[in-house]
Amino acid sequence: MNSVPLLEALRELSIEPSEEVSLPDGDYIAYVERPAVGVSFVFTDEAMFLGKGEQAIGTGPLFFTGIFFYAEGVDGYSQYGHELPGGLDFSDRPSSLRRRLGEPEWSRWLDGSVLADRWQLDGRKLHVSYSDDGQIRVVTYFVPNIEG
Image 1 (cartoon, rainbow, N blue to C red):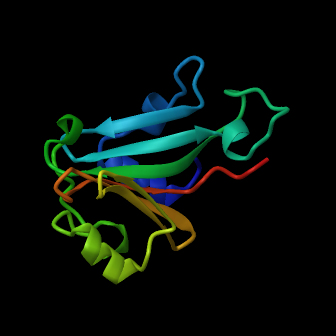
Image 2: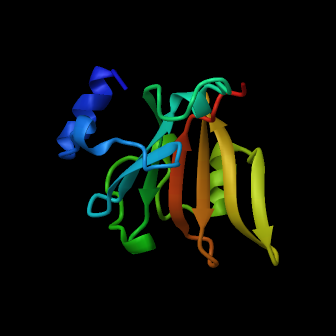
C-alpha cells in the first residue's frame, strides 16, 4: 500500500493507513469503514491476494483490493454522494445497467428477481447488489485475488 494517490485519498477521509489498516487476528481481509460517507475500503493480505500458499498470512503487505459504495440506510451507512464506477447512479435499475454495461458475467436470482449482477470493467469487477424492488443497495468495485 505505497500508492501516493491512494494514501492521499484515504487521508482526505481522515484515514491514517498506518493506524487503521491492520488485519484482525485470524483474518486475511481488513476493512476501513466510513459509514457517514457511504464507503468501506478493503485491503487483502499479500499471501491470499497473490496466492502465495507458502507465505504465512499477516507477514506481507496489504493490498488495496476494493471499495464498497452504499445506498442510504444500507447497513447503517449514509448514501455515497460522489461518482460511482461505470457511470452508475443509485437510481439505476437492473434493466438500465444491462443496457449500458451489457449482459453481466454473473447474476444471482431469486423467485424471478435479480439480487446481484457482476461485470468486468477496466480490468476490475463491478458487483451490484439490489433490493427486492430492484434498487441498488451496494456497488462493489474490486480487483479479484490472483490465483496461486
